[in-house]
Image (cartoon, rainbow, N blue to C red; front, side, top):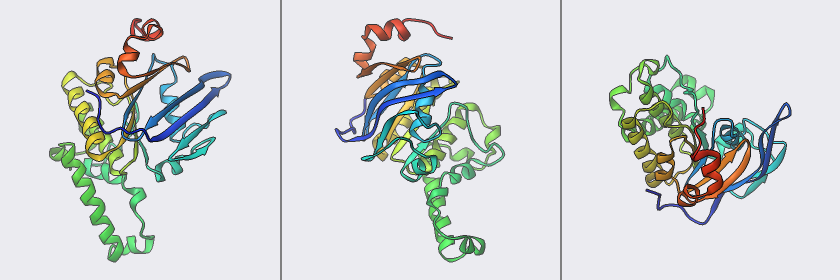
Length: 263
């Protein structure tokens, strides 16, 4: 089930990116692009460099070589605040929520960059600040409805089941109204029913909001169903890039990843 909303316009291009930690190459000359409106998957065994690639895209890591072109602007590195302000949002392999806060409050934190009023108005909680907060709350409530988590809107996130915490984290990322959404193992630790729900939400985000998505996922059935194109990494090097069908039948991929059990 691939998406229909992708275009030929390139939103993100990664070219010749290399990243080294203490002599160990996490990424070695990786190049691929992501078209506006598509779901792009990055796969590979543990240690392949997948999360490092996402960290480069949103500025957590700065590559020693290569360039990133986003929305037509080329740079050697992206800084996190630039990525966020230009419409890149991220979820993490290990859930990074405020566990003592409610679902609603966690999602509201995703609206931080949308808050434009100064501290004076925010302290008074009147005028522009009041109108801004009402708008941010309206968007947060829409996301809660969209993700079907009304029943937990006031519940403390740390007490929620794992699958619901993953959904709340997706909601917080969506609150930033991203153009590019980076999902790092959104299905990790989920049962089959939770995976089906998350897959449906990812498709809906892509189709209804027009959000471009890059995801890392180990479940190959999910990857093949969701993705328009797949790039395969193996020990930091790019092994293959193509449609799900091309990747499924690629002998190098079968040998290095799909046909081999990895811890």
